[in-house]
Amino acid sequence: MAVPTSEAGRPADVSQSRLTAFVKAYDVRGLVGSQLTTEVTRAIGYAFARFLRPDASAVVVAYDMRESSPALAGAFAEGVTTAGLDVVMAGLGSTDMLYFAAGHLTMPGAMFTASHNPASYNGIKMCLAGAVPISLDTGLALVRDEAQDILDAGWDAARLAADRVGVVTEQDLLAEYAEYLHSLVDLRSIRPLRVVVDAGNGMAGYTVPAVLRDLPLQVDAMYFELDGSFPNHEANPLDPANLVDLQARMRATGADIGLAFDGDADRCFVVDERGEPVSPSAITALVATRELRRHPGATILYNLISSRAVPEIVAEAGGNPVRTRVGHSFIKAEMARTGAVFGGEHSAHYYFADFFRADTGMLAALHVLAALGGQDAPLSEFAAEYDRYADSGEINSTVDDVPGKLAEITSWAAAHAGDVDEMDGITVSLDDGRWFNVRSSNTEPLLRLNVEARTPAAMAELRDEILALIRA
Image: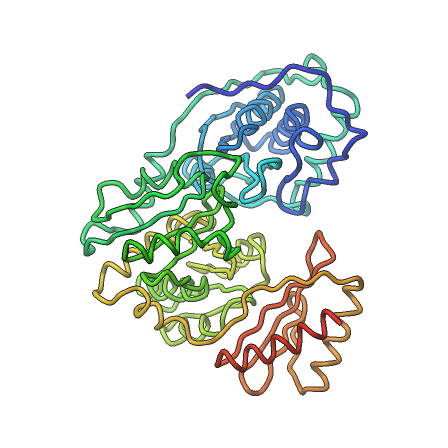
């Protein structure tokens, strides 16, 4: 594995795009060339290292398969070492592999990826030692502002260099990552399963062969070639259009289970033997029951978009269900506060206390494979035990006046005797078991609607009524 190096060149044209435009609440995500350049990532690396000192001595860095990732990661490493910290360059990896590295090595980390975004984008997900998240409120704003000052002044290594310049060493962590996952879920004694995996040309094409080898699994690999241009479909399984190829392969082969990963392989979606998606809420409930067998009475987290079946099943299994806002920062903070052993989101992010409270689609997939392979029923029948209600999925609508629409929805709820909860957007619960949530986007003039009811007809009726109100 060659250690990537940064490009030589003039300082970035900071007049084009200030860092405030693409340093988001929890990560960095921008257009390569016009926003995210090697000069920018070098400055961010320097500022990140300065933020970490004196508590840290090294930073672990990994990157995805995008064409721009090696050079951006190399420039970041140059910034870190200029500030006096060492770099462990892990090279190619998934985001959850970077979280493993930050936990396993007990050092801060940086992952270069734009997840499922198009090839023209890239980004940085940074964390503290132990995979502890960092946000604008907990240090990312300081990193952003110092990096901007460096860009404004122009990079001057002689002026910026610390008393000690750090060194870069290479360390391949893929085998240790796979071994750690196997220590958490043992698949050696399950019945043989035929598994179709759609890697979407993303990082699952690199990690899945290492994790699923030498197990009683016959793996049918789809789009395992690493290609950040995503030639087959977007690496975003949350969009049903990107599951079509996997569903067709399932129906053609009669495989037992299908798995679809996003670009940086931290999310995993499941498809049953009929080619039908299994809802992330059902996966949350399934994995929760497995964790509760290991940790009786433990706390399980679920976000407020998850099916009401999740807290019901957790309570029936003797656990303590706790509802949270949407988003990894809220889930991880609540895991630390409550001591929860597991948490799940409707977006197929799954968080494990024994995986450094970080999200990992791969570990969730192993739990599903273990559960399916530990009994004889097909996945559709088995998963039905965890899927009790009809849901709409997330429906986005562009609106001109977001606050005005939310006020209209609150008035509608009052007129219909709905119970209103404002934990994250507006959640309205009705007496007949129907409920819906409307949240605004942080970055676009969008409202996101999720609806659930006891029957498909009742769900569709409420969905159409609220959508008409939103889009009027």
